[in-house]
Amino acid sequence: MLQIPAKSILICFTSLLLFFSETDAQILNDIAVEQEEIITINYIYESNRIVKSNIKTVLFHRDSWDMSPPLMVLNSNEKLKLSFDDLDADYKDYSFTIVHCDASWKPSDLRQNEYIDGYYEDYIYEFEFSNNTVVPYTHYELIFPTDDLQPLISGNYILKVFIENPDSLFFTRRFMITEQKVGIDGIIKQATSLQDRNYKQEVDFSITTSGYRIINPYQDLKVVLQQNGRWDNAITDLKPKMVVNDKLEYNYDRENVFDAGNEFRSFDIKSLTYYTEFIGRIENTNEGYQVYLKDSERKTFRIYKTADDINGQMKIKTEDYQSTETEAEYVNVHFFLPYQAPMVDAGIFIIGQLTDWNFSETSKMDYNFKRKGYEKTLLLKQGYYNYHYVLKYHGQKAGDVSFIEGNHSVTENIYTIYVYNRELGSLYDKLIGVKHISSMPE
Image (cartoon, rainbow, N blue to C red; front, side, top):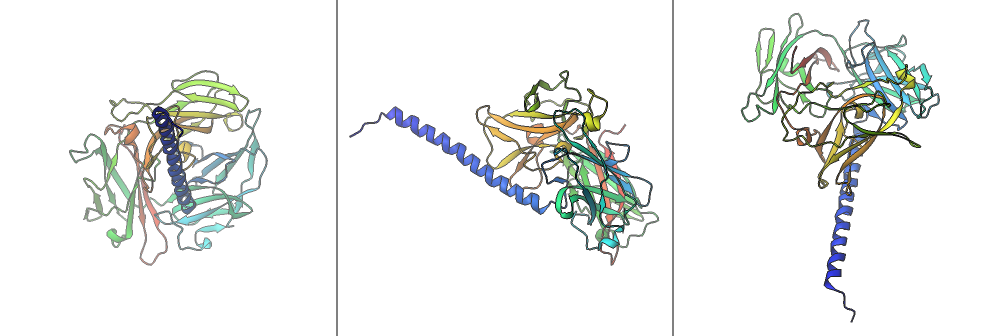
């Protein structure tokens, strides 16, 4: 009979166990990916989503103010500017349309002629080819509304960019039109609850309806609270705690509380000729520029440090050439977060404007067993970027910023209050008020 040393059996068993543990982890990860993809398909029309991989650096903001949200006042002279790059580096006949949505970002029960004045679709005419870049691309721009397509009513909208027909979708973008019919006042403070006081922030506010008739504020109004650019953890449908004459009070202790999080991580790649603070090294390879960020660290239990940031946004800019739109380079940015073992019931995501604030395959990090940590490579245009590492359990909507970044009630955050009104007999939600409030007012 063949005799196998016990030591060899132990080595083989250990190797087999390691193989199955890694394989099982990969299987679980694949299942989670499939679930995330299903969620992506279900919400494709209600979110900021890039469907085609050739589309990069989609920006949508007020014209002439690139750090502003895509929000404008109804029947005003305000304009929005949409821009994006196509890495196919050719010319395409891109078109766009808009879809009106309710306060929950589901398509409204309206016909197009009830919210669009003019044609239901229009073309994106402005384009320019990149100039002497390692990664070639075509830069497109649109000023909205156009002469041929204008929105008629306030509320939430989805802008859809496509070729030939809306089913051939390339990407979507949210924007809002407000009427500013009500006044909103609010403050951000430490949470009232003693157990949350050092870790959470409370949004107390009031709505003044002078001159605007609301029959039943408990039923006809919908209020949404948003922290920075995130929608996954938005607080929705708060009811007034008290109504006194024309003033609605929303002064709660728990219902209006957010994790305060931490200041955003950042990196600066406006120039590829020198290293900024968080850049480990820069390489110019046959596959293009490679920018390796310094290894990250978990901040969960670290003392709070103040830092200037742009609350998760990105500022596209090159200092190496004159034209950011057509001369800025695309570079592969490498992220690495040390972590001893992979999590099988959750994922780590890079969240910020650089990933559209979405929990998707674009933002999800992969576990590297050899390096013992989570890694991700993103192809990004030169600029200044903010981001967080956010934990999200499979099947849950909201991510947990505190798991990696920590929670500090003194963190500077921007909160936005949206007030919607559905009048009796109406088929859509008006946006009647928007207010931005900083947790650290000047």
